[in-house]
Image (cartoon, rainbow, N blue to C red; front, side):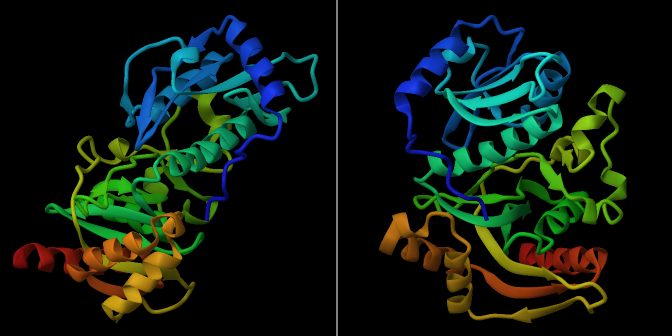
Length: 315
């Protein structure tokens, strides 16, 4: 699960000076201001290759228009101090140093990690669950599970089979509408899933290849142009767990068990308190609920699609 961002900051005066210095730099590239759930941000970047790659990754987020990065609500800065510095690349968030590294792809990896953390921290009006999510025929499926349970691989397979994409990391449940609002970050495909999802291997220019040596970043729209889903209410909850060599099998669970499971996987359940429990109870009351042992992602995604199609007929 994501850890909390480095806030509150321990050296606000120093960071204010750093941010002022960064704002006074001449930046070759500044992205649009993007909106990811309740987090508005821009990225200032020294290198054209990284800037082109980052703008492609963040295109699914709602762009709020071009602006000087210093006028965005929050600003990431990726600095390249040149080859005469051992740790030439530095990443800052609102003047706060995140990492200094000799490797540009590592600066990108920390940018993507910190963005997830920041989106969760800024979007507390939602009940945020560590879950992948997809939609089918206007209904959402939630896939809550700890890290390395196979949820990103499963949601990728579901999108390939015609589902809409909501997220592979942080499912945002709107407590007012009880719908899942999309957080369409690029799918993060780890090396362990590269063989299973070989057909999703990014087809990139050579200049971008260093950025995907340790993780593929797959835009849902590269799977299907209309893949990003609209907000929709959950109708199915499936908690996946991958076991090599196991038989793919579903186990039905009670709605009380499902509420507990969602609460255990929530990023911000404590801040919502009793209201969070009521929200989960209302969400789960309209859902079928299962645990899923995955031996084969093809079998698992086919079986999940069968349940979704059955729900579509009945709703």
